[in-house]
Length: 523
Ligand code: MSP
Image (cartoon, rainbow, N blue to C red; front, side, top):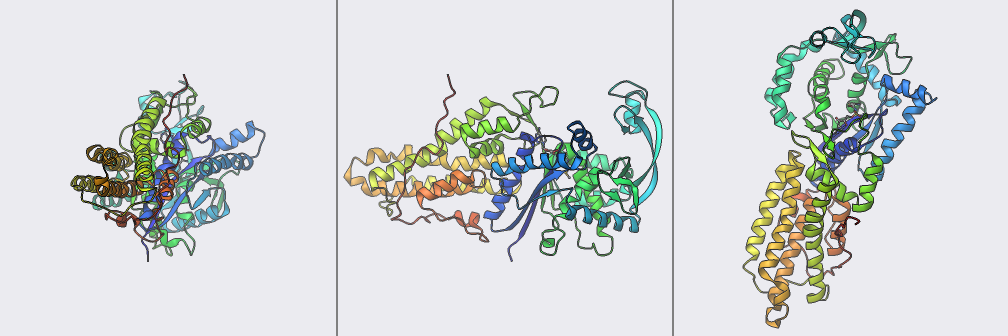
């Protein structure tokens, strides 16, 4: 039985149009999914949309549509964006689907019966302009005035259903202690632990006056399940079917730091609560929560007021100029996968593209194919006389491979990309040292030229395998041109790729167009 790997992205609010932030997390998940498939695992990759926010009703009204019509229209934009970009998700969940709603109802019902969800009274400082409550410390910080419009806050109470989060602080702390890799990057752990140690309050999980938009509380139509509770359950509802249940517990939730608390505290606590209910003993905790940082754009925070979102139009423009794989390369290699934010700046993109993809990876692939064409009639030769420098090439390629695998395993995509490109850098050094183009002029060197080209081809095979989760289309093209075997499903092709001397002689190699044509900005 192959090992299972279940990876998720957040489900995105349908009120916003897709932008680079959403594309980023989904691309990271897609890279992880493709990598794990290469490792021979049975992967389930989920993304989708979060549709029951109150804002959806307002925007729909403003556009003279029903909430459902508005949600349908916007969810379709996310689906199209991810399809156009070639994402390999196995399902796309929408929280307005029946398959989701019916299961959420069952989960909440079970937690009501077990006592972890109860009807209580919420008291807080209400900001009428924002229609939201501020916690005591926030209200005090703003001198009991609205941080938005400065009007006095009103002490108000309402009846709500609550989730007994307060009962789970010890459970959460113990889990974090026993699973040191539960939250990555590790830099975020202390803050999470500190906040749990401060003490957890029960959280309201229902609201009133939702005009029928949302999932009603079981047995109480006057309350609607709070959108966040509804949304978090998507990870479970989608696989809570007979043929998918084995994918639970989820292996990895990907998201950004903005929604870390929901995923690393509230969600695991909800799962602990549900797992205690009869019939839900199988509901364990996710393996890992991976919370990346944020993209900013050309040095400035992306915001509605600045109107500087890298939106689908801009993304499409990059794809047209550089190709979708180059975009994926930039997102992976230069993105905020670690603890600090990163700048989506055109100059950084072009520099990475030209210096790494055009000059190193593409040039290496084309250069070797050209030499095979010129010196070996386009057919991969059998190895010839020994070339001592080959030992250094093998050592460098294996060292790069050995850095790549742990980097991928911990979603350090920037380090993984660096390691993969190092394979091609090592090949460049090898070619410069051995000078096959000079040797080719001397018939006595025909044997060493053959060996050099064979060694280079091995490096290209390994390097393209490492880069393939990141650039599946372009690396597939390399495999086609060189006649390398496509990785088979259910086999750990990544592990198998490390061994040297796998390419067979006698296959024809096609030169083809530049794999990544150098980009010249228009004058
Ligand atoms: N609907 C909730 C999530 C519910 S999950 C059970 C939500 N949606 S969202 O549309 O606001 O998406 C937030 C997520 O989008 C972030 O956690 C991150 O994955 C991605 N990003 C949004 N803006 C981003 C950047 N500027 N940079 C990187 N990723 C960002 O929150």
